Length: 389
Ligand code: ATP
Ligand code: MG
Image (cartoon, rainbow, N blue to C red; front, side, top):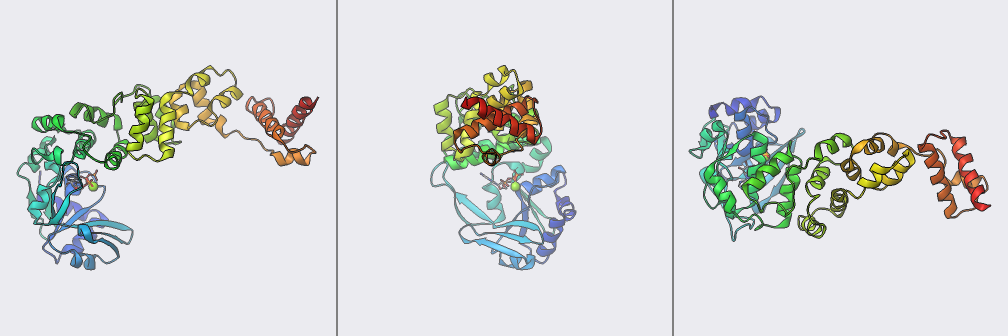
């Protein structure tokens, strides 16, 4: 694995070429972390992480564009001609207590690499000359597909690294090296804020295979997921297939995994992980399958609509079956071409009956007994006539 070719590979990416040009005159700018890893693996990096050994001002000036600085951490985000760069000063970190956010202080590139999570992410390439700094095992581990922490206290300092480990193992198809696996098994996964854990879970749900990730995470540490969580729910693939581009695949995935988690516990867990009320309620409803039975038993198109209407799309998809497919692909888009105002214009008095009449006309439309506007209006008016007799 030729780390010296990283700058060449970087120059083939438009924003990479811009960064190289800006850093050319500076001897202290390093590409680090995921970007180096991905370039060495021949994968396009998701974003470019750059660190400067010393003040970042000169690099910001050379890059131009708009920059937003965060003085406390010595970092800045630059947006310029559509590209975005995250720039940080090299820093070392210490933890006031396990799971705390780190206290940071300026450091050398070597110390900056030593604070990182896994050997494959502890490689830095200097943009001015392509020279490489790394943990002694980084390049072998990258070539061998191994995830290895940099020191035995790594998971204690930051238990979110359990999630990061599972994320890389699932995404890159890497193995967790045995000593790292033993350290992961002994870690306390809950010794960290709900906000940070929630962030990791939401990232996990957006990975290409969240179920592979959850399976690995559960193997790494049995306590990392809530009791009753099913990392590989059998119902999920068909639900995602039914859902297609509609609704939220991440929430459907989470709901499927949480079908066996006791309701009170699940509510507390999702609150702790700082899910929005809307997302939490979607997962709660969809995970309980409440829509399942009435939907499967519905015998007509209007009965399918009555069972599915108002339920989250994710819940309908998880309920599964032909009726769910029909609702998601067709029936949920069926509407009326009349409104209550049309009935009032036809002489009907305002009141709850107007809504009932519209619902009746909608049911007949769903059942394909009627279709056009005048049929809908007549059907609603006949319903009102019959009801008033
Ligand atoms: P991705 O492709 O998911 O963005 P990445 O490796 O770039 O992967 P980031 O979360 O973007 O991951 O972080 C960038 C780098 O910062 C990582 O490669 C790693 O070196 C370091 N890092 C991030 N979070 C941690 C952490 N919790 N502990 C130690 N190092 C970390
Ligand atoms: Mg990254």
